[in-house]
Image (cartoon, rainbow, N blue to C red):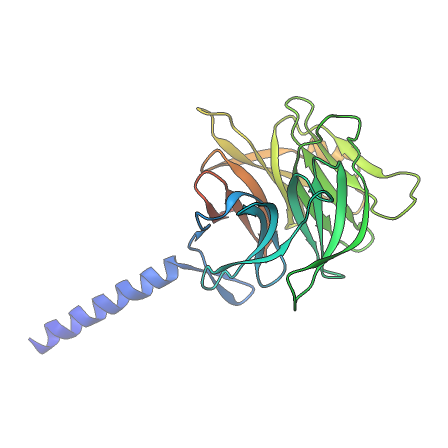
Length: 273
């Protein structure tokens, strides 16, 4: 009887360990929870996704405010509104990216047709504007930005922007300096409807949106020290299907990709095969 109880305890312990392993992933020696992070029902129209090294950030509505920056603690799932983007300066903010070098955010506003660089105050619910410039699609009624990503590779710094316009959807890399002669340094058609942008493992990632009944798929382009639109576009690869059909944000957390699904109201891990 003692031997049987011991075996039972060992089996139970094994199951507990297995469940714990399934609920965690190890990246760079650190363990991170893989469980999806739910977005509170009080948040209206969540979109965009960024990772600042410790928290996720996204944009959403709260009460009468349409553009509020929310911060998500991945350890406990707590969502806190951090700063309001007031109108009329901000109208329809769609995407967000984090620049680690100066700890600021890039955001794209469809209504004002501007791309903003802002700093969020850690001690008060306020923002300060670092810079802004006209988006490259100002000739369109709406640029419909669906993703931003800051490229922090040495010597390759710049802001990647993807827009959704059906067959005319674009992915561009922008020079964010002031009074630059050439704002767009790379531009190509991804031959899909891209949703979100992230750089991980030497690749530029997005989600190729699939109109139901077709599924969305993970999309990647190879990046190199000699980036050129033709070589980047030629490396285009569609891989595994992505759950859901309302992906409105993509971000890298360490070397993992996470997506914000507006329909399911979840921030979930994407496995990169």
